[in-house]
Amino acid sequence: MDAARRERMSSTHLPPDNIVAVLYRQHARIRDQFDAAAHSSGGQRGGAFDELRELLATHEAAEDVVLRAVTDKLLPPHRRGEGHGA
Image 1 (cartoon, rainbow, N blue to C red):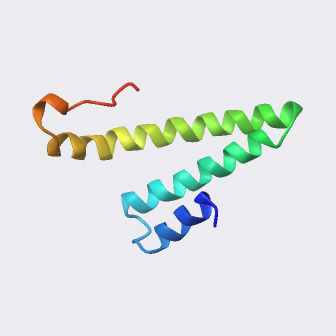
Image 2: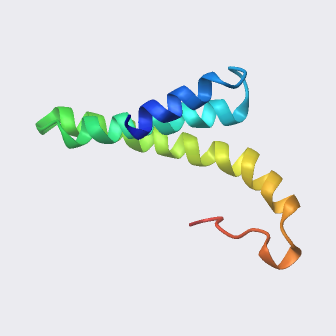
Image 3: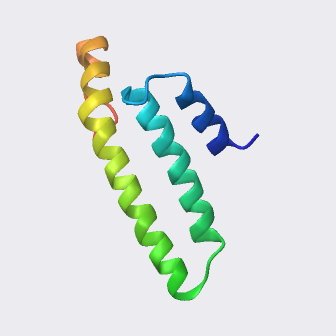
C-alpha cells in the first residue's frame, strides 16, 4: 500500500473534523500532487506544481497554527520554537 493510501486509511479512523485526520488527508493530497507534477509535462506540469505549492503552503500554515502551538507547550523552554521557519 502506498503512503498516500495509508494516510487516507488512517484518517478514516478519526472523526472527519479531527485536525489529525485533516492533516492525514492533506498529506495524501500532497503526495498525489507530487506524483501529478512529476508525471506531467509542459503547461500541465506548471499547473500541477502551482497546485502543489498551494497545498504545501496551506498545510504548513495549519501545522504552524495548530500542532506547533501544542507541541511548544509540551517541550521544555529551551526547545520551544524549533522548526519554525524551517
